Length: 200
Figure (cartoon, rainbow, N blue to C red):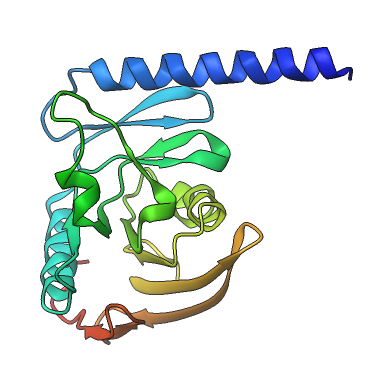
């Protein structure tokens, strides 16, 4: 492929991403739904089951107790996985609060995923595979330090896995516990979150 062809291809990809992002910004998504950009298309994610929301609330509460003042927890924040030109809206994400506080009040820009300190996804029957594979790889590529996968549909039973040490598109370390046992999060969280009350 010639240099001109490469440049033209990259220019087309950039225009395609810019168009998708502008469309995403302008969407009027029904309440409870989320819009994400994945593999060159906008995908609407339906509202989750009540148990899914219950787990997210308990994770939020567990994180809130240990969070440094400059960090905040969000449940509807879009994050851009720049290396892959994807945009996800995780179930829980922790980022420096200044990124949201200083955002353009008239805009709807996602936060760069590389700024996130923790991303949590809670599986639903319809998306469990994506959370285990596609999003796992995307967050690793974006160097998110902690990926928390709360898998209500794991074949071994409901499980929480804490992935850490991202590099080369994967996480080099992981620890899993079944629902009912607490899981530990590394610094800057330095806390243990119980799962005994997680609804399966």
